[in-house]
Image 1 (cartoon, rainbow, N blue to C red):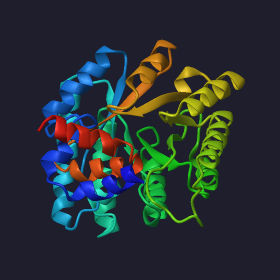
Image 2 (image 1 turned 180 degrees about the vertical axis):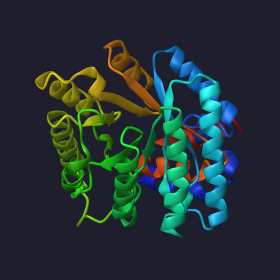
Image 3 (image 1 turned 60 degrees about the horizontal axis):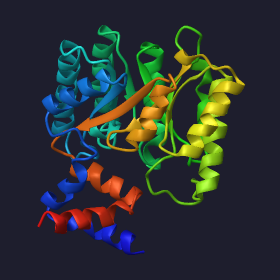
Length: 303
């Protein structure tokens, strides 16, 4: 309860205090920071997915700036020789302001990624965005079959049906490509599983369906039981290593990450950067209130 209380009030602290926590989970504020971190990961046999922080914008001018930032990010990443792809949040491009503008901006980014033979992952946000983001993905997947993927969240009760509903887009040449995660947004019990065991059960059910039906999956978790469960499913279906990868957040469970890499599995780390890091950081904090006590210790330790 103490940690939850601290987590709830920390977002109102000065940003310099929150940065003490945030800098462990964000590559930095600049594109140069992101390139440096990405090169380090590549040097350790780890791929990356890059993300410019900033979501739930208020104006289309912000959306256009985010589009320009991503187009520049693609250029810089490929000039730098980084082994990675890109993640983006549709609300950063005006999904909740003007869906047509949002689609146009994201399509421009995906088209540029396709010119580099690269890949854009559309993040799944909270439930009011789910249908819109699935529709957005469907349109882009139809035009750019090998260059766009989607995130699905195991804690939503609808997720397996959503996966099945997109199977008409699956093919041997260009399989569907999902990142499967637990889900971090606060959702009502009517639409989302709440218990740890329930969420894990449905995570593995979704994962088994994807592996069995030859859908590419990014297994995004830091949970040891889920990783063991994934290993068992990979073995059960003799899943080829070019049809799955493991994914983790920057700064989280590095020893577990290393053990997966040493087992010979593909690993990709989510590398966020940008000046709008505050919202991302406070969301991470709400997801894991145990971090709050470490922040308080760090604040007092550093005076």
